[in-house]
Amino acid sequence: MKATIWHNPACGTSRKTLAILEETPGVEVSVVEYLKTPPSADKLAQLYRDAGMTPQAGLRLRGTDAVERGLPDADDATVLAAMAAEPKLIERPLVETDKGVRLCRPQDVVAQIL
Image (cartoon, rainbow, N blue to C red; front, side):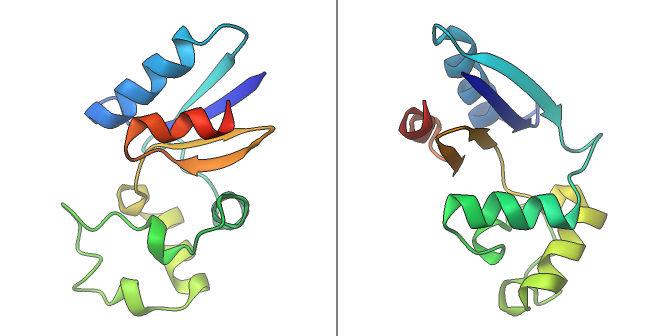
């Protein structure tokens, strides 16, 4: 099984999720450091749609100015454009497999798509 993780190596939850993926037999992991290689607004829209969540639910509020900018109440296109332009606004880690997408907070959520 292939798994892609949108990863921030400075985040403990992201590191723990990556470790789970790497320790799971048969999982081929692709790591995307999204702060260096941000996903497009279209890719983010697909990830959130496949995870069954709104872009607003995928906003990182802690350590960002998302609330001050009104992003939690903004429309999807505005939120996605902001995330693509400033990837620090993306809550992490997102993991995609052929079984679906999950925002893995807490990291054990990844088991749902393995």
